Length: 334
Image 1 (cartoon, rainbow, N blue to C red):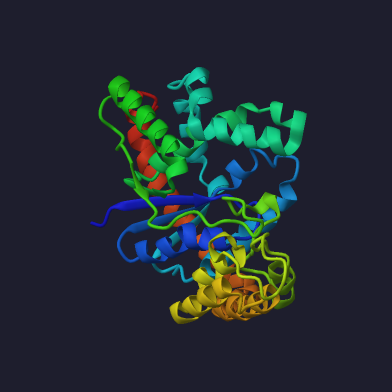
Image 2 (image 1 turned 45 degrees about the vertical axis):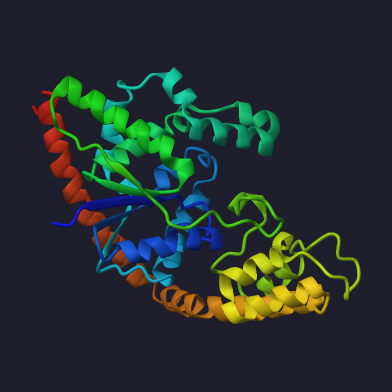
């Protein structure tokens, strides 16, 4: 039997290039090799969007369409909605007894996200909820509810997987060998930078190119992208290595065009406006197949609903089997 792989995405907005190159392309490869469960993590999205449930609900469908549009096959991937698997919530409660608040506060990923909230929202960032702090516990429940053996993650998520492994070891030491320790499967690709040069492209940072962006939006965003600040005149030589326009050319343009652009930029034979216009064309060519698939699913919402319903049904069955083992081990299988 193929190993079970589980990953999840929070429905807080459409997917962008960072998601595609950082995870999506990897998912497309993995779907042929594993028993793949893909969670639309609406409950976790509510940890910091509890006051905006309409946003989360809308994006459950939006993010599913994005995933289908990049090539994920519902015949190979079990798409499911987290809130429709009550076993995950039950496991979260049980696991909350096995990890201390101090340990959660030391988790590097949690510390980083808390710092980001404080930077983005000022004093509001200090009002960290119990649900947000317990995110790693919830994620451990996500993984183990499906006997997940592999979890595709970036390096910044490794502390969350280690926290899950600790919880599993603690559970097994108390109740007997019941759960499998998951392993992280590191993504082969690196994080994609934002249009503003930020090391991270993010939904909330205003520096992202979304897979759902139309041609007009792409044009506006790329025309505002950061270039070499030392290039003042059109004919000034520039450094393409610090230019975000060239950075994106390397993602979506041909290798031959990349080499030409690089040489012309260094010699001062290329203006920034010309380079941006060529990137706009390359970006739209790259996104066209994704847009076409997206348009199909937007016009057939009943298919998206069916995909989620069938995937959730299968996920529910697997989670129920796992919970029977957990309850028996904990002697609460009344």
